[in-house]
Length: 342
Image (cartoon, rainbow, N blue to C red; front, side, top):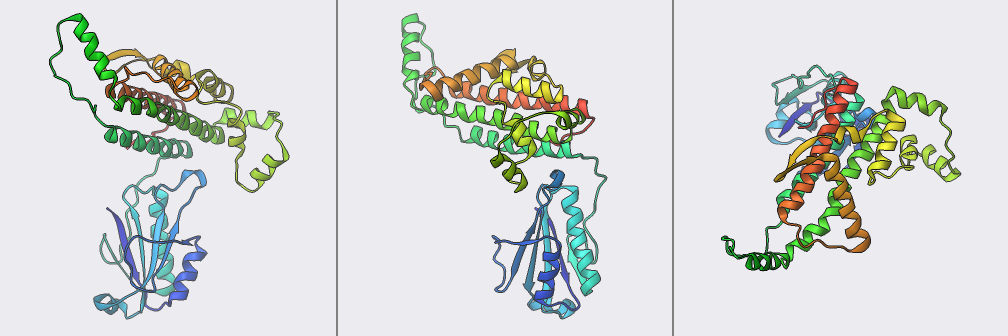
């Protein structure tokens, strides 16, 4: 689902429409749709200040049939983005059509009626809210994907638990032989990678816009090698990347140090919240610390815990998710923003 609008120019060639789009920063791309032979597919995305979510696709294509009767021109300009697109994406979609219509004349047909543009709304987002939202939504999507794909136990045992203590112990031993439990262990590092990715990327976003961090950057002394300077000059790395590389975000002490030193944010304090995760209530900080320690054992010592069940692994994912939500709630209060989590 998305916004689809088409301009049928009064007079415009294929090359004129191509030149017009390239002048707006559109670049050639491939398209999954089966467009007519001769179609030129383009895309646009604005990375500055996290303005784009979906961007804009534009297609210059030869018209046939009833479409050829709209203006009689041989070529049309189709623009589209999804309903999840940002305000800036939708504005660009409209701007493409308005500019092309001024240059080439013609008629717009689309989702909103003849010669009508996509409606805009009051945009209250900020670079911080857009940046954090994009990071959260990416991690949340992958987290949900893992949950939905996580296999059930491969060993089927009677649902009724034995009453004898010795037999109950043997039943648990039988469960520990389930091959799925090896997979659950193997996925623990992936869960921690989600946690690390979210907090390391969020740190970079905040470094670029937080007033305290910007003031600290202006007086901070940091030694960097010439290769790093060349990478920054080539825009292969950012200043925020260089600052962040000095900390490990798979270590709560290091993570907290980074946020306190640069942003005056105490992440440990934020995570010092009792939450029901799975079947028990515990502090989020404790849950994350245990999961990080668990990951360390799997990665560095191949320590597999055969007692880890599907529900136990989901509890680790839920702890990561709850940590992100608690952190985002703090950012909304600190920066007076609303962060879109949909």
